[in-house]
Length: 324
Image (cartoon, rainbow, N blue to C red; front, side, top):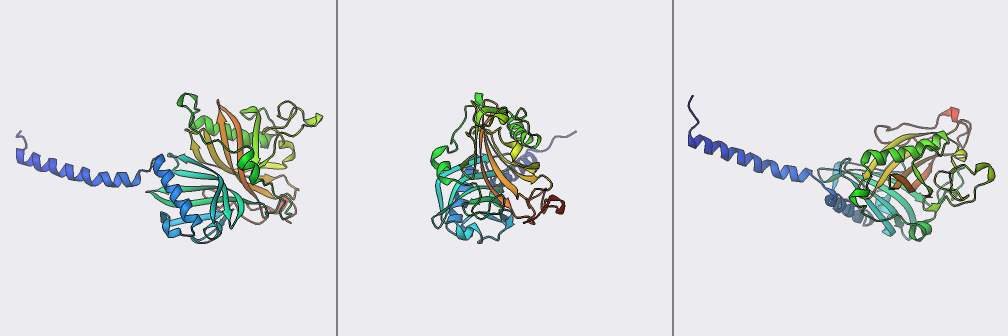
């Protein structure tokens, strides 16, 4: 058997080198690490408050929802958002290719508590999903301005930590996801023993503190610490039949934070509105330390969450009582 000639080997080596050099730029274009995701999110937010969608790296298939309503590029927050607020946090997940923002957005000086996620592919944004809580929003009983809301407390009372947790103190992705799911399971089953949480864990809904209240004698075992409610308290009064459409957007292992959304479906016969929310969970030492929420109470006929794999699902069934 004869060996290939030196000139043939040189030509083959040259072809391989060319092919490798051609493939390297394509690989770098599609790879977006944590710093790249932060840059993309920063550019997106700057474009949003400047009303300039063409300044953002939006893909041709960009899809944008606000409280489950689809908005064309240039509409919704693209028109109303004028500045980022005093409280801003960002979270990143290189596995799901999602980046998230939680904090305040100003609309001509009027503040909204928001959670937003973007999905990045090939360094372009293909999806944006916003949960926007405004002080004037309808409450659980449809009363205008009756929603939970307190941007001042979110900003100065107990703002989310901005941190990097030492590697040795971190839970895994799987453990973080388990902890958040245990919180929703406890609400459905009305059993505080289910949730992996620290006693005294906090909860803020659209910035409003919803824990730290005295527990009546009949609820003294309903979670709580030293007779005061905590994030494990209150499931008996939520009127929740199930927590559906559970979606995990960002598992930020470095910060030990999970950003996830879900939907409260009410018990049959109750006229309370459903609640579609995005929770920002903070974990320490393998347990839930507390959570922050951006949320709104869903009008009776609106299908939510309006994103795969639940696109168009979960309108309120007629059997679930009055639809006022």
